[in-house]
Image (cartoon, rainbow, N blue to C red):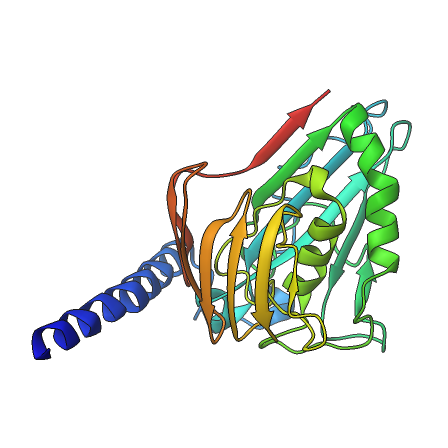
Length: 258
């Protein structure tokens, strides 16, 4: 019995400490945390990832990004946002949720479409273009309007910026959204609705306020959540789903052009 206990402790430590160390090492390598720099002096310019909206004027585009959160929070969680434009438009609309500002936490065009998030370079989670993207946009706009927590923000366990993007993913399954394991808040569900769809919009999720739950999803694979710390395995795009770093293995960026 003592051997099993010791083995369990070792496994838990590896699952928690190794990803945390890797997250810290990456952040230090990129200079994205513990620099002592004030938030207003951090990098917010374009990462050069979004297609030129003028050049691609006749193409509808939908993209979802996530970047490490500002400061020490970037070691454990990410901040996501969505951008889109319809065919014929020459500017993107960027939607996200932040805690600062007026009472409504949903923000429109407060930052450039693919900008660094207070010094952190974003990663692409989804990229849809053409007719498929055009068909998604009205549903995305409807999902934004139906977000159930427009005046509430809690960094943990939610609702927060990840809860917002997860809501859009559930309402628009065509996005095939796979939010990383370190998208803290993506699993937040009200106590009155503990069972429903995962952020990918296909599968099942059981979650108690985002602090204890289980997800079986088309894009997520299998994932267990305890106190907002998520661990799982993705078999579609083979990878371990780990806290602090999101995933270890193949990426699962959804790209579609039609």
